[in-house]
Length: 144
Ligand code: DQA
Image (cartoon, rainbow, N blue to C red):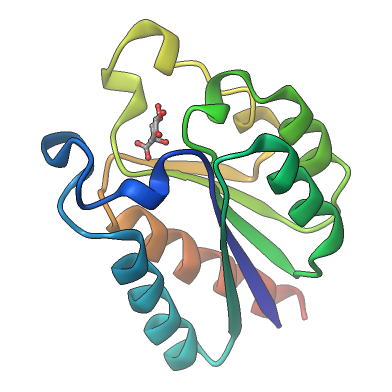
């Protein structure tokens, strides 16, 4: 069983970027926490980050996974080709955000990804990813 964790534009800058909103943990540190938790859960995990929507669409189309955790960054709000690529998958998708997008600027409160995701976890900092991983692992194990 394998879960693909995708991070979109600017998330490679975590740790240096707007710490008050996104926290001080870097993307490498988040990926290390996820790898530890995945090992404890007995599942495989692969992390992918890109600043380019096309590269993320390519990854969604080519990488094989039983489930996807995605923080689309700003593509959350307008990334329609990413949404279409994700909608073509049969695998369950959980959308995550470090910040609570619903408590921020109006344009951030809309997600074009949410309607095709199983659910969305937002506002828990790096823990949003860990909650998503635990939940997705549980769902996948239940179905297998
Ligand atoms: C984000 C929220 C987005 O609005 C923003 O563009 C990001 C990060 C989050 O994790 O809180 O890049 O997805």
